[in-house]
Image (tube, rainbow over all chains, first blue to last red; front, side, top):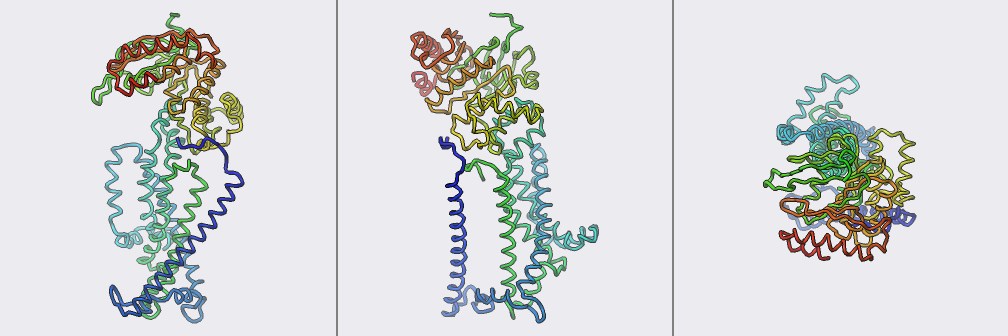
Length: 298
Length: 270
């Protein structure tokens, strides 16, 4: 047993240590970002000064300077418009709404599928192959169909972005379903015996033991699903012709790439930041909800 | 032997064959437990002692024979929550505090909050863990975790306590201290205990009777009445009668232990 014999709750010193690790973590994030930027600029400098063209020609179009990209965020993309950063901020809020609804929908559906499948081997054998197959279809291939199928049935308030949320959900449900299933099956057999001695019914065992035991698994799926839902929302916007989100912006700036590449790069950075915000939100929720021994957290 | 009606557990002709590999785990077991007894099942690995415990608790079904608990079938007794169980692992739930772990069976029994809280406080006092109610299991030592597990098993006052090598994973000193604590709890509550162990000294120290089992197939090799007076203390382990009884159990094990694996043989000579 690895449990320390001295049973103490985290005291003041531990909280002090937490603050210290927080600062260390922030520092390491800054260091990693700085290193990546450094490599990008170094690569750019070596390739452009030597004139190497493999694997691609390095110039201001293929690899704009980092400061040019960042500067673009403070410039209006078109005359008489607010700064690109402001526009992208509002677009990312729109995409975030689609992604969040898609995430919630996909997570709920995935969790429900996991619970249903956990009840019978037969169901797993029968349905799992199709669930896996659903993910082998490229999302871009089914996105237009989802828009056509779903959009007409949505109330006016959900028109347009509602079908995008469904596309995001399509990318989200899969990891959640698979990991929920695994998590529900991960319950300690002795814990199940214990519940038998309490004459606990199937649902009681599910809610009191299996579901809590599955939480670390579910949350590692939700982390994957969080970023996947942002990607799903952006991709879903492409065939929907929606201009209010990041997907529309990406499509738009794609066309002007050869003239102003920094605008697409800036949009990509904002999209990545949105994915990170979603990821961190799930990590935060996990910290607040999941109570497990440090060695048992997945 | 008292009349069979008053027995807490009545095992008659129980046989258990596991279909996989056609292993005969138990053969023709008869065993009666009177109210308030502390009975240990001892034997080498593969003698079926844990299997017998699990059959008494209706966690598995016997291939033939019958088990009657409190005058009911084992199934009925389980559904009536007639017994508490403690495993070698404490099997505490990480996501619940110590108090909430003890509270679990009470929640399932539909006790209201106030009644639960009162019982939890009593149980924490019983296992000497006052002040640890708000801790999470992983913040406790192995011995403390096992005490929580015992508190949980006893919280709803079951007539029968089933213990499957509860102190097997603990170090010797913790084990001896918990032996004393368990005896004190048992004497306070008067419950009947079935205790699986592979430690001879533990079995003799705790029990009113020690059931010695032999392996392949699992059978009862003999039953030793432990006539050491209660309350048993640290001195009990130094009494001449204690050593006589330990020897008696050991010889019973050895006479039937021809099939023991070398490490099991070594364990008997500890």
